Image 1 (cartoon, rainbow over the protein chains, first blue to last red):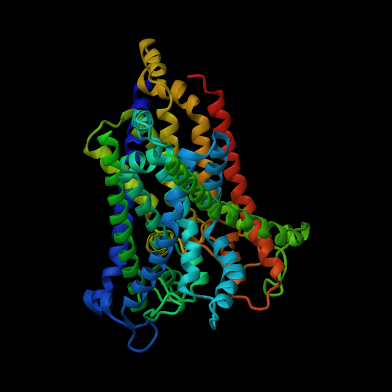
Image 2 (image 1 turned 90 degrees about the vertical axis):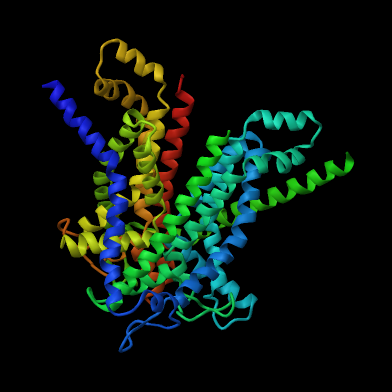
Length: 290
Length: 282
């Protein structure tokens, strides 16, 4: 009897172990099932390179180029802000900060990561958006720039914690060797530690960017939601994620619009898949080398 | 030598500056929400239904909806996540399958939250015909927090020293007995930490519940798991973007309740982990 019970439990454990693979495949299949139906109406090329997103005109025009460019502008902006600050902060936490401050800062990063995106979106709406509007004398502060700044704050905890891990896992002997040769701490950091941790830092940056591309609520609330090809960073844009979130509520199940939003979901899923697998390879390389 | 010492000073100054550039705004965000939100918080705000098109009254149904969703998500995700963690730490061998599982977990963690929303809509709402309901939302959130629970539980299980297992085996215990009586009890604080972090994430996410549960305005409590429900993060989204002439105080109050709920859970998790690390004797 005990043998039988253990047999059942161990099978359950195996099945649960496989659950993550199952769910990833299930997500992809259901996105495909609903999204590929779009291509009865249009071609993948038209969908990806079409310049007009007018989902409710008759017939609907479903080109997601403006949305891709919207996501791109916001993401580049956020990357430019968050990568230098995030990596510098990671170096500070890993190498410079005294031990007690270090623990506090790490907990602080966890708290930042925990703030719900809708709360950051709200606070962005009431503080950042009016500032951007008055500083740049714009008709509206709901711009790609506002989105980039807010998203930078969502990418930073990811970048900081993973880059900090990478720096931390560099063997102590590297450090001691450099210091013994008479390098200052800063020389040791940027000549020895940074190159040794480089692949982990690359992974940190990739995962941070992945977080930015996938972020939905904050970006929907503060980028102004205008699905036109952006000419600068100071105009309203609409991202891939915000389009799904804003329009799925109104799209009729089984309509062309509904299928198109799922096709956008496929694009996002594939993007995040590539980024995560890539980052994982960089992290893995780090581990095998040392 | 003087020059390198000076450049070190300059460099460290910029590193500190970058850190402050993150820490100060975060502190400000929390303080602003707390200061402007506190005046709105009173018993009526927490226990009353929304009135006058959400411009007055309270947020009680949204709080309850979020609690139901979080509870549902954890009921679904904790058993699967814990068993998966046991598999990875106790059974899996270093092979292709193991690598595939780990890669899937990384991917699940990286799928954009709105894509979870789409998936939940396609699978639970449309395919299984659960409709927009607490059940659909809980399951969607449950899958979303699965990687958090697996990763944290696995770390906790793996940090139990191998000698513990060896001793248990040498006394004639079976593999499952060893896991059940030796490994699991020693890993509980870590598992608890992961579970609470998962709860916090589920409570704060909006995009996955947009099309799977969320009701715009529902001044009553859900009666079964097949009902739609209001939820705090969605409610905050609605009152900050869709309801004009809204009293700012109510928005800040709602943001404060949500933020307090999520940060409280995270603080509990951090405290449990810190105490556990201190107590750990091996």
